[in-house]
Image 1 (cartoon, one colour):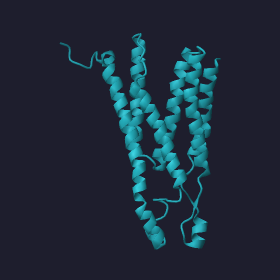
Image 2 (cartoon, helix red, strand yellow):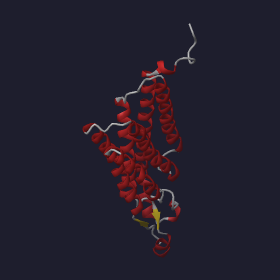
Image 3 (spheres, helix red, strand yellow):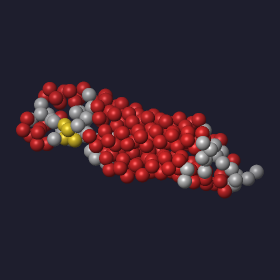
Image 4 (cartoon, helix red, strand yellow):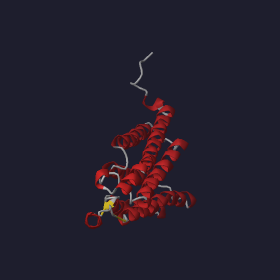
Length: 225
């Protein structure tokens, strides 16, 4: 097995560990401390930090295995199969957990996953016709935006984990803290903007692939002249 493929398999092996830490709550509310002090108290999200580190390392191996494969002529059919699979498993895992944790709208995640399935199906049809779909610049930008968006969301929850908009109702908070949270609501809009950017870039990338390769699947989809 080549070094590049070993790096790719390492990325896949990291995913279960990432899932464990990423599935932990990103905002931890200390109920006992709050009950004693009557002031909302939050615990630093250590698990989220570990999840972010694992995600960043795994994302870096995506660049590393490709670099090693090209530089040392280690491009193999196995690598062509497992490398994009590892990428999709890693990113999809993070996005699905975001939907569960409320960090990203569920419909956005569905749209992003649908794009990946559509383009994967397109690649299968193209392969059956002896054609290889080369990666486009929009596809590369999409990957970078998805990874960057996931990192931004994690950083937000790590840096601003002391602000929780769901665990404690405003009417249960001390007036000064309730006012602080109320004025912090625009910060939530930042997460929403990240979600929209990732979703729209993903949609455009999918449309670009279909537009450039429509001839592969147009048979039966358009009326014969």
